[in-house]
Amino acid sequence: MSNKTRAKLVDTHSHSSFSPDSNMSLEQAAVAAYTAGLEAFAVTDHLDLKAPGGDTRFAFDPAEQQQEIDIVQKGTQVKILKGVEIGLQPENLSDIRTFLKDHTFDTVIASIHFVDGVDPYYGVYYEGKQEMQAYERYLEVMLQMIEEYPDFDILGHYDYIARYAPYSKRTILYKDHPDIFDSIFRFLEYNGKALEINTNTYRERNGKSPVLDPDVLKRYAELGGELLTIGSDAHTPERFGENFHQYLATAQKCGIKYISFFEKRKAVPRKIETFL
Image 1 (cartoon, rainbow, N blue to C red):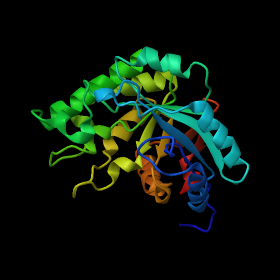
Image 2: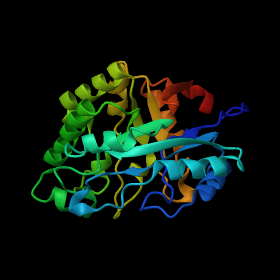
Image 3: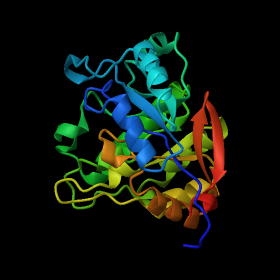
């Protein structure tokens, strides 16, 4: 690396103790993000309404969360962006609209956590499915959901389904699903939405690590996709900014010129070269 000073990055995806799968306080998150050298981070706690089995834990009070963010913001130099990660399912879209109608955010991530009423985290989803079928169904649901609920800014972890897959190949390849990937990318580009690199996906689980397929990013760029975000999906302090420069270098090689974050629901793009 040259002697130039790198610009500071923004982590666009993290979870605090307002999410049931995180014990990290907002104060701890702010200290960790500052220590990691970030300019800002978005707190995007879970909103998964009508979760399988009647699990009601994956929802939070945005007013309470944002009030606490305002308090923590006064004591830190790192900027805290107010966000939410909405888990889309066919049966909860109207509930999400009602739940969020009285709240404002800097950034809204749309994710698919459940498929056909099943949580892939527990492995049942994959039973009786070959990898192509399991991944294709996930992408089909994703396309359907973002078309039916386009009020979001970032499409979160498109390859989430590979994290917990039992297959020897835990990578979603563009060449295996070109038509549906193209439909997703065209939707994002046309509607001003961002694709996310989620570095949490590429961590080792059960002795295996999914890999980011560069062809996904190359095709996204070929189809005019310019908005790309990067998030650690941090649930613990040490993970803020995890492997960001590695994946930004990959994105640049794939033809992506900008990395973005959202503030007051508006994209703020910055040249990747300033971070490398």
